[in-house]
Image (cartoon, rainbow, N blue to C red; front, side):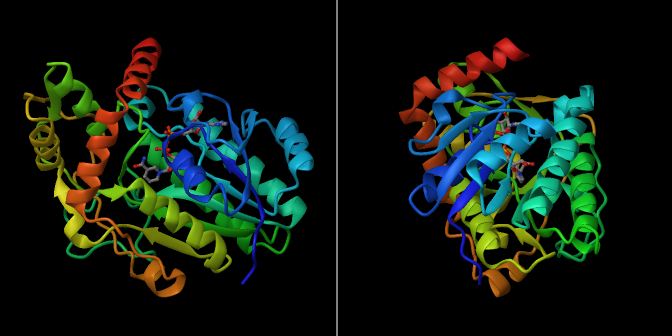
Length: 325
Ligand SMILES: NC(=O)c1ccc[n+]([C@@H]2O[C@H](COP(=O)([O-])OP(=O)(O)OC[C@H]3O[C@@H](n4cnc5c(N)ncnc54)[C@H](O)[C@@H]3O)[C@@H](O)[C@H]2O)c1
């Protein structure tokens, strides 16, 4: 098994990559690249992580950063990740999610190093009519522009991995719906905390949708296990146990119970609204030795408590959201 020391981690000012940096800052020397875009917060920067401000799709700048830090692996979290925004205009999604991943992959090829591409269960589409959960062999069938760009990146990187010309050492993770500290309050749980603590109604999409709710630390640990133990060219579903699947309305009511007040208002469903993501992570357990540690109740409780204890963070993030929107 290869061992890595110097990592280039992209998107380190965002939600999941900052959790990864917190968890692994003492295990690796980490340099982060982020262009401080949507979802980024400067206060998410983790002490000890070298901080570069750049667009991963900017080939020349990425080459000079990579030559400076000489990573022995790249972990690509950076992406435009909000479905509603992709429904309105997907152009920046193509730039970050596809051209950005491509630029990093070509650098990994040049240096002969491993790249982990952090992808999503959304590439499978919608499981609401399925009789079994998705495995890594299930067909890719994305249903919104965001997940189309994530699927497109995966397909290109898989071709780079399989071709004699590139021989990219690629491992792809497909993560489940993730919650935890430092998630931008456009997403359901931090938004609910914001609404319930500010006497605002939480807007809940009318049609019930099921998600597997995964703690961000479990997601980070799954990505790190894939980095160390993933087979070259392999894809791994990173998902919590099946009993962590729940409809959004129930999770939002749990948030309200923890806070002790709040009202919920039903609103029209978003466009391109997937009703179920349902994923089997037994391959990750078998090959990576990874399983999620958190149960749903603890994931929700710990997440809500973090936002209540970090009201200043939520205030600033909500201000950034209002400023951008
Ligand atoms: N949040 C989830 O539930 C979830 C689930 C599965 C997979 N994922 C994947 O995990 C990754 C991280 O998601 P997140 O929720 O932390 O997102 P996020 O929006 O919180 O963070 C993304 C970060 O990437 C940066 N970024 C975007 N484009 C960039 C570019 N071109 N150059 C440099 N930096 C750029 C942003 O500034 C931001 O800091 C994404 O690839 C996403 O597809 C997320």
